[in-house]
Image (cartoon, rainbow, N blue to C red; front, side, top):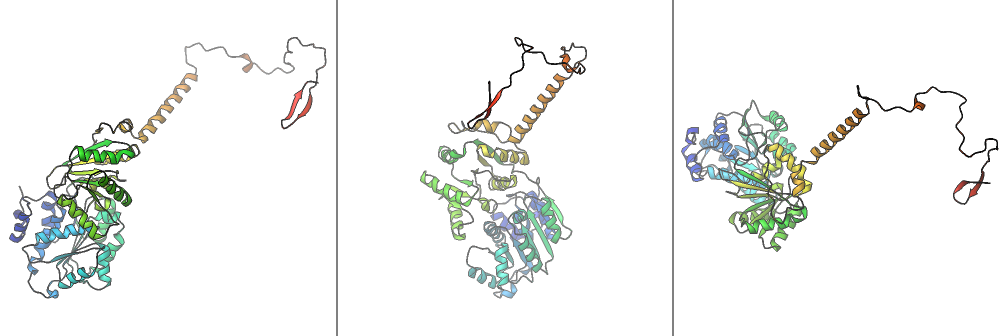
Length: 469
């Protein structure tokens, strides 16, 4: 069994890690820490909650421990490591971990992100820090206002690279990389290592070592999945029922839109369930307050959009609930990655209406798990049957196969079968043409009488009709 001491970490780092309650390193830490200490560029892939932050933060602190000093001069504390994160919550979480690990080293760290005034961040930067955690936009703001010097950055870390790609931050990331002329080492960490991420990695990593300790897209093993079929109109009612009847204490609820998050939190409070919302339209102070209330247990339900899918770090979060299924299976994996972390079990609940059946099928296909369906009494009568049926695509394919089968059967039925007597055919279709044959006269007609012509009479609005003369 590998321990943190076996990885060659300094005693002050080992003491800080022990205080955090970590006894043995995770697989990503076992593989990444020695490579980072050796100065290699690393492309690491592991799901959320597997310890990626410590996988790069601990070796960074080990590398820069020799530069630690107690001087008050900012010149003695230049930025030596830059860590980029896609969201405010994730940046704050990473910096909090770095500060905890650096507790006994004397190294300084800080975080800069948008949504809050720049002045306090500027004052912190002017005092000098060795490790800076930032979001791309706010970092470029500081660079433009010349409140930050990146000339001495030695190690650059791009965290949650796939989320950076999804949120459209890659142009900003490339601008920042172009500013880091003196960097000696690059690290890229991501929950998934897609083809797009590998192309991005080639643009700035030098001879990287790939470290991947999980499937390309996989759900956490300690998470129990369950699906509750329900109509869209009764989702809120079912959510209230589950929280109250099962006495759920901490539930992180994901919705599709910011407006939906506000509306759901308001309605839950009216139903007697204490809830708050966190999304991109709220200020950073409001978001931090909502998260703090949820962590402290003052709020039982936190309604969030996908902006919080990777930025929330809540110890032993028991329940994640998908009020709206995400559009992509990857987002489902990132959502439920908030629970089942650090060796603790968690439950991922999904309220699925008939319109979301195809999304559910794609998620199950991607994570290779057939989620059990549990119909809550009184809520599943309208949507239970459709959810148990195969997806629409399979139904359409089966219907096409049935039509093709029936067409083939009809074609075979019309073909003559050898050895079987065939019905007599009408001779009119096989007899040669004989000229001069007239059609037989109708019975009762006088063959010598001249034929009567019918006179045409105009009919009002009806054209011409024939009347006997």
